Each structure stands twice: as C-alpha cells, then as structure tokens.
Image 1 (tube, rainbow, N blue to C red):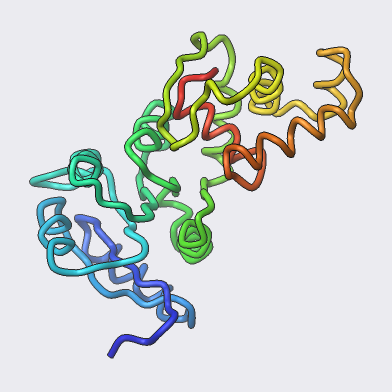
Image 2: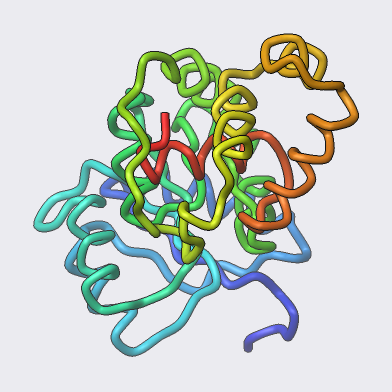
Length: 221
C-alpha cells in the first residue's frame, strides 16, 4: 500500500544485485518508497506508460535501450521526471550530455550505497545532485569554452541576462570567489554578491553548482 508523502522511486539497472542493494539501503529511509524497478531501458519506458514515480534512478549502460535513449524518449514525450543518473563512468562529456537531456543528478556507482538517498531527496526537491568527484571534474573543465549561444534549455532566456551578469556567471562557474570576481571585474565584493543573488533568482537555482550546471547545459562557457 502506498504511503502518502513519500518520495516514489523507480530504479533502472541491468544488474539485479545492484537493484537489490539499493532497495536494501532505501528501505531504511522513511521518506522514500521504491515503487518499481527495471533491468533494461525498454522496461523503464513500459513501466512509465502505466505508472508514476517522483524520481528515476537510471543506469546508463543497459540492454535493449540504454539510459541515454530513455532520456531522449522522455524528452520527446515531454515527460517531466527527476532523474539521477547512476554510472560506472563519470566522464565530463557524459555528464554534460545527460544534463542537456534533462537529468537532475549524476552519481558514480561506487558512491551509490553511501549517497543514493541524499541524491534522491535532493532532486525530488528540485535541486541538483552530483558526486563530489563529478563536481570537481566539471568545474575543472570549464575553461576556454565556446561563445554564448542564445538558447533556452532551462525555460529562462539567456538574453534576459545582462552582459555583466553573464560575466559574473562565467566566473562563478570557474569557482572564483566574490572577492576574486570583484578584483577581476574591478567592482566591489558587495556588487558581485548582488549579481550573484540576481542570477540565483533569475535562473531559479540555489547555489554555485546550480549556476554552473545552467551554464554547462546552455553552452555559456
């Protein structure tokens, strides 16, 4: 019987032993209920045709249809669901690809047992979640990127940002502090903080990681 107010989770992975392990971990979480699981991408799509979940924990490498194809199908269908990617690989290109396809989090399988519940709770609240190693790799890759494209992947037009806001957004994404940004742009730290607050509000994210992920998805860097 479904318990009200719990976060409903579907787990998709081609290894039943991993599914069983995640379920065992999540059974200790009062806020989370596992409502389904699948061992390939086609079964994921079939399940979601008749059922609903708040969060999908999705493996990338699966038979029949892989995780990337599942995300593409969801995007084509206009289906909105919070997705935590679970993968043995944490290549930055892969992380960026799944972000553009609508994933909300990326968790390395080696960290799953320790952080899966935290990741699920985070994305269910509209936040993003990334393993610390993934965050570090993404931030370190954010240099020498392409010029800004006027895209709108997050429902917020980049053209609504001022040139100065775009400058500050880029520098925040490079992990620069407000003091460092102020020195580089020759403005006060308090002015940088004002731009930072404006960006958080306009882009509807909660922290620097959210700003960096927005920049990645929209090819700003």
